[in-house]
Image (cartoon, rainbow, N blue to C red):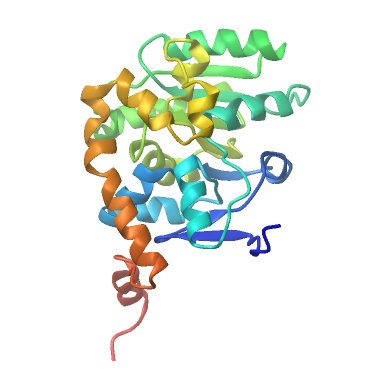
Length: 266
């Protein structure tokens, strides 16, 4: 029997991950921001200070990778369950099937895809749980007028949940930047490619591959041009950093800078 301690949070590199099951998260998630870190996120958190700041602002950070499950075991601090955005979002919808005060706005995916997902989700849940959608144009994050247009649409919809599927780090930066502007939204979910999965325009990996930690391989085979660098170039770096953490040699790249920013000079 495994006697290693089960911690409320597990430290992987420079990120604390909430050690929750799906049921625990859904019961606790009355309001707040939810991010689902994976290996690619962990690597971006080593190099991108704005992404790191956005991640620090999240209320819940749950494991979205079987490889992170493995890494936590190597460190002797096991995580209890993989909670990917593509599993969390449909579970969230089912959990709130009969909660009419919970309504969702889908932000992301290509033109028409979010609307297609809306129809499928509402039919499955049996009510109009998704009340609005929008597919922003490329580069919208640098257009203040477009960002204002998005915020107005979300507010007009009356949605209490904003599910953002723009990919990392764009979706996390958007939530961090604008969460305070959306007073009617209680819950923010960063869900990556989940809108495409819900629309049926992108298929998830088979369950066996996912359970073996090979979902990345399935996605690489499906989208080699877009994902080869993420998985084949950046992946080995993660295992090197994990080894450093296991040996007590890993150093948080942003710890010194953040300390200098908050501590007064002598």
